[in-house]
Image 1 (tube, helix red, strand yellow):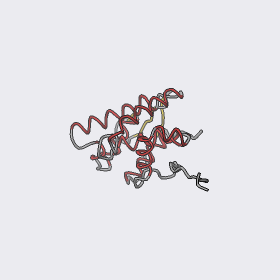
Image 2 (cartoon, one colour; image 1 turned 60 degrees about the horizontal axis):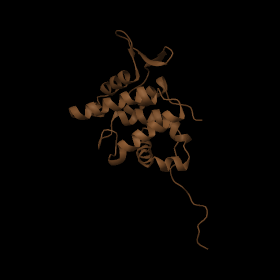
Image 3 (cartoon, helix red, strand yellow; image 1 turned 180 degrees about the horizontal axis):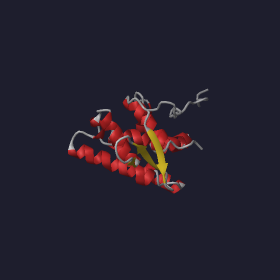
Image 4 (cartoon, one colour; image 1 turned 45 degrees about the vertical axis):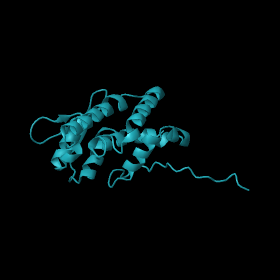
Amino acid sequence: MAAAVRGAEELELLERLLGLPGGNKYGVQGERKVPVLQTNNGPGLRGLMTIAAHLVRQARKDQLLGSTAEEKAVVQQWLEYRVTRVNGGSSKEDTRTILKDLNMHLEDKVYLAGNIFTLADILMYYGLHHIMVDLTVQEKEKYLNVSRWFNHIQHYPGVRQHLSDVVFVKNRLYTNAH
């Protein structure tokens, strides 16, 4: 089973994707390993969503948080889903439910927030990577919309970085024709 990208590593990937200089000090707190960013001025920031939104604003890429009020709400909704369901889900049944939810949502959408690439896509990609790596070809075909979205996101410039490429192509070794 592939190791999950979590906490500090995920935030460091986001930092690089956003073109930030790096050097932030990340840690984790508590049993659930909640990410923490140590800041020079004031108290540290806690929580994946809070720190990720802070990094996006620091990079002056606010469009990743959504442009309209509705887009911002949808991005927030998927970030909450990511933290509460994807991070919280550990059983096979949880994974199936998450993939089913996403598959239905992505049926008529390119990205989680519709037609725009956002922070929700980035963090959902990082959160699902370890799951997608372990899916069989048949499971990937069952969740075709998730597979299409995931493959698109992993090829978005700067997103995948050192994470393994998840293969979606089914190669036929033999054909039925003689």
